[in-house]
Image 1 (cartoon, one colour):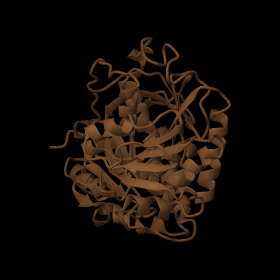
Image 2 (cartoon, rainbow, N blue to C red; image 1 turned 30 degrees about the vertical axis):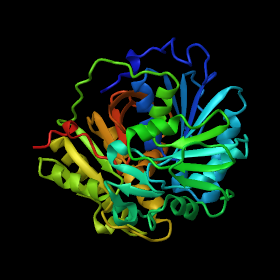
Image 3 (tube, rainbow, N blue to C red; image 1 turned 180 degrees about the horizontal axis):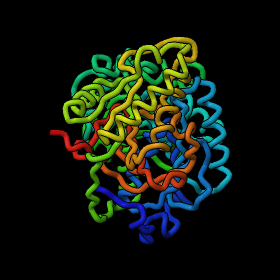
Image 4 (cartoon, rainbow, N blue to C red; image 1 turned 135 degrees about the vertical axis):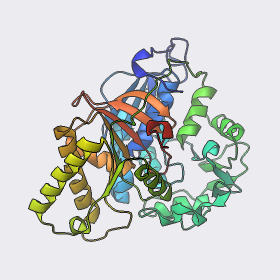
Amino acid sequence: MKIKNDEINTNLNSPLGVGGEFGVGIFIIADDITGAAEMAGVCLRYGLKVSFGIDVVPENEADVKIIATDSRSLSENDAFIIHQKIAEQIFEKPLTYVFKKCDSVLRGYVLTELEAVLSVKDFKQVFIQPANPATGRCIRNGVYYIDNERIQNTGFSKDPDFPANSSNVNDLLIIRSKSYHKHSNIFTGNIENISGTGVYIPDCESIADLTKSSKLADNQTLMCGSAAFFEQVLLSKGYNERLAETINYKTATDFLLVSGTTHPESIHFNEKLAGSACSVISFPTDYLNPEIDQVAFEKWIIDIESDLEKNKKMVLYLSNSRIEFNQSSFILKQRLNKVISYLTENSDLKNLLVEGGATTYSLLKFLEWDTLIPVSELSPGVIQFSIPKHKNLDLIIKPGSYKWTEYLFDIK
């Protein structure tokens, strides 16, 4: 189902419309921009008006205010600081409901960021449900599985920043939040109720388990989890999915796809696009070094623009291998951003598709596109935005580990 934002009005019979359980509104804090976009898609699906800010609480009035950060790409200490500052802004207002969006496979500083929120407002319990059974991401006996395979035996074990060296959810959380982890009571497994102080991470193998999880916590509990879990929270609070006109969206004739992930699924998908009359371009080795020939690099950018103008379909990425030198991540992203900036300003490009949260965040900061307007949810996690500062261009983003919706590309 695709929900178009400008066709949605606030549901006056919802808890928000009558000032019910959620009070003045919902605030969502996400640790990367694609996770924030995914939450926007869920909200659109349920007829909620969304405002979307990057690193700040958005000023525009809305049922749901989403704050996208890039804390997963920061140090643990910086991740704590930015979440603490955002929490201070949020809790200036009374009667707010806060949901902390975390990665569905627990990458990032999940416990650290929750601790930052707790430093501003005290909650008796913390409830974490990262699972998404619809995509094969489940927890069984406190162990995380991807399509019935322990996560440490999947591609997530090779994640460049948060490799899954264990499949135990307790280990995954604690290893990644060493400095700010303060909770001695972390409960996993089959949890039927929550009563004492601590962190609760129940098993989840089905949608029914997600529903059960959404009903275990009360208003003294800080909720954290996947977009799939947040959807069940909405359902438990009385929201209903709203039908809207189906949008026949197709980008097969004109797109630039910026691939910011080395996830095996994305590499395979790019190979499929290469077989469908689409240019698939990686950075030449000479431009992956600390120092480069700027004149030659700028000539290469012009050559790419000519290719895009000719073929209309292009995938662009840095490399499928990890490149490491001092400040390599920042330097390489800035080079990639420079290419994309030139292409968006000097071509007739109509559709910009970006995968990977850190890549998307870096690009938006570089282009100074600080405000986005959620337009439609093309599929779970694949969200279309309009860009107030570039009205002729549509932006579609998704998490690096999610699959693209193939009808967008007309793959033979």
